[in-house]
Length: 185
Image 1 (tube, one colour):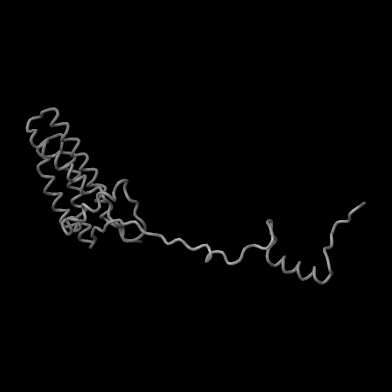
Image 2 (image 1 turned 90 degrees about the vertical axis):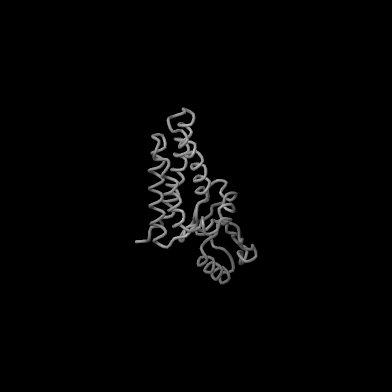
C-alpha cells in the first residue's frame, strides 16, 4: 500500500476550522457575548488561518487539483518561506492560535477542529512532508507533422491492412475485380 500524505488532510481540516472559527467569532461579536473580545480575536485568527490554508500544497505523487483563485494566494504564502513551508511551524502556529478560542462557547468547535489540524500537521512534519506550491505545468503539444506518419490512401470504410494487401496481390494477378454475386441483366 502507498503512504498517506497527511498534509492534504491537515490542509482541508485547517481551512475548515479557520472558517468555523471565523463564523463562531462573528456570531459572538454580533451578539456581544460575555468576553466577546475573545470572539474578535477568533475573527482575526479565522481570517488569517483561512488565507494561510487556502492554497493547497502539491502532492508528491499524482496530480493536485488547484483551488479556484489559488494562483493569486500562492505567491503570498511563498513570500514567508520556511514559516509557511515547514509543517512543524504550522502545527505549533495552529496550536497557539487555537488556545484563546477555547474560552468562548461559540468558538469552541473551531478551536477543537484547529487542534486536530495541528496534530495532523505535526504528523505530516514527522513523516517528512513539506509544503510545495502547485504550479501550472506547461504541456508540450505534439507537432502535427510528427503525429501524422502518412495520410490515408483510400476513403473510409477501409478494410484491414492484410485484406488490402491480399486484394492488391489478387487484383494484379487476375487483372480486375471479380464480383462474387451473379448480376442479371
